[in-house]
Image (cartoon, one colour):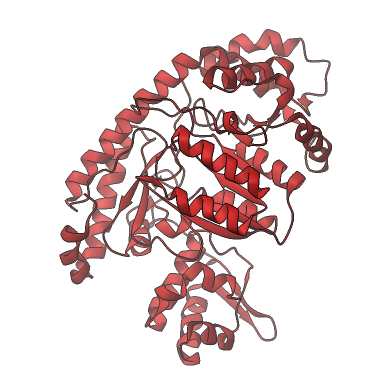
Length: 468
């Protein structure tokens, strides 16, 4: 079985690589968070065998990384991931001047302040309590259940648990139903922190492809029925990062296949309300099978700082979730729940604000791409957090590293995948203000020019291989 380093690199990406190139690829994995500080890397001999390269090439690559401070090597202790002792910054820029495109999130809704003020009487009535709740405030659970019902799946408050965000909800689900050593079906690409959560809970990944034009439904359902994974994690609405949406018919077939396979289908609806101009509204995936587990949150429609999420599941699973939750947290803060209960009463205003902001961000990204002159148009992006670009050549990691020299933090395509693939792809958020996006696109143009100036053959191929 391949080491985790080789899985992240992708053996095909290292074919013929020089020691300098191999060191650069490993450094990119460290900077991008795909290799963690302190993680032990394979020995020189083992890595050389895995990559089918000479040991001297691997020794030289590790030496370059050690010289720059990205690994530490101790006699008898192996080689471990490290970071330089000096602060790593993007091109010498301080934190305030760098633009971080690794986080696709908007600033707070204009209604957040008013909702906070309106929530104070509700909070005052709770001052005699512990300040947190294991299940969630009844009025907030009722509001979340009502929103599910409005979207097409009848839901009762007893089928809802309030959590501290969607990722917290996902971890709670895995802590309850998880089974180490089992397989998990995941979209490729997908939300990176979901992959990390599944790895942490001991799952082996079964990727199924998604692109801007949607899912390979046959591959997905065949994998469910043939491999019978223990869990499957899907983002069916404005998929992160491709912005694709599953049709109702596809949702029904996939939910049915998961039920027949005995797979726990976990659906992430964090992006479900981020509609710009899709023109139609699918029903929640839970409408097609009672066993679907749904997680969602307020982070994308209100504010990332409002750490409120939820789980919708069958009552029997809700009971198990409640029994598991105290093992790692005692509940969700009541103050944030009070604010969320107020905000959920204003969903039309919230979604209208989100659509306006995302529309402006999408236009700014399109303008920036045109100014770069790559010949890559904006792919269909009717909502969601980001647009998913085809760069026409495997330069995503190189572009990400070059972007840091210009004060731009830009995760490469492989950050959203397993096995080091998707080097032709790049996620660009559409969540920043137009002014901030314009500045980010200017910096991206400079990084692109840096990459292209040293790779003339890729530049020449670009117009012919760009996305149409």
